[in-house]
Each structure stands twice: as structure tokens, then as C-alpha cells.
Image (cartoon, rainbow, N blue to C red; front, side):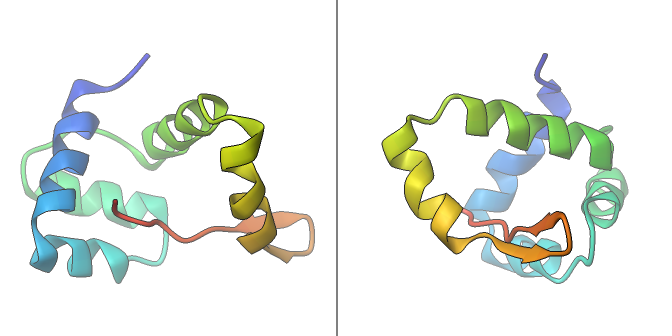
Length: 85
């Protein structure tokens, strides 16, 4: 289930270049949650992981192909970068 506070925060980030830069400088998802908390939004790094997983599951195989080709690996972990479209 989507977290409405997270959804609102992500929409604000998409529209605000300064906030996008601030979030882009975060080293992990908990740090992004901390930025959200400083603005009065309640969500966690785990909420961000779930949000991304749910969004990924809605993509078709054709949409997933370029993503799969661009994901870097570090051991068995995926290294992903947030793209604000």
C-alpha cells in the first residue's frame, strides 16, 4: 500500500530542482527519509524500497530491459540511481 506522505514528497521533489539536488546528494534511502522528515513528511527508507519495488512491478518487460542493462552490481547487490522524471 502506498504511503500518501511519501507520494506527496516525491511529487514535490520532481518539481523542485533544489530539493532534487539535495535528495540526490543523499547516500542512502534513510537519508532521503530524513530530508522528508525535516519537511514534515512521515515515511522511511523501507517505504522508499517498497515504493520502488511496486513501481518496478508495474513495468512491462520492454520497459524493464534498458533498466536491467544499466543497473550496476556490487557483489550480489544492485546499485541503482534515482531518476526524477
